[in-house]
Image (cartoon, rainbow, N blue to C red; front, top):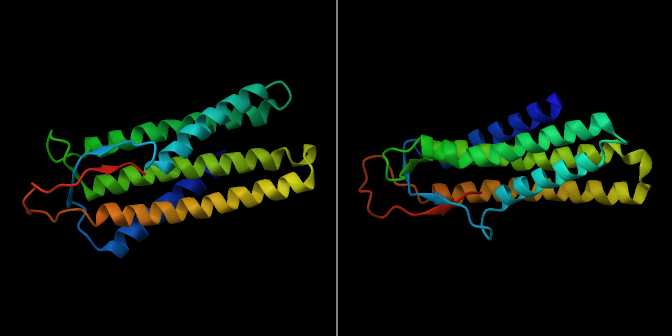
Length: 185
């Protein structure tokens, strides 16, 4: 459990730091308000669905796989909570009470969201790995291929989305009238 937490956290931190570095904007650049949209908040959706599925599958497996089930439930709840904390973190770093946030707050919220989504995916993969002895090799191979493709797609999505949102940030001191709204990852 600790390994999943630490590796996914490290991956999220590195991705956000590298992306922030490649964009070269100041962390106190301004962004507009944020919101969640089912059609545009894919990483948040993945983490939320993963939290529900992890809790349900873990709860159904408690009798036959007690240690694995408890781990799956705990990680799913934790990663689901991170999805909730991401917009709170952005709001906590507002410049004023109007919902105007900063690029630094956006990177923090994006990192939390990415950590949650990646953590849910890795937890799902670990759950299947632990069940490998009870599944056919074909099911295991297809499951790992799906998880691997999903993780790569998630990284690409987060990388591009961070660039698209950050491109709309206004430099510190710029007039605040044309702030763009954006959606959580």
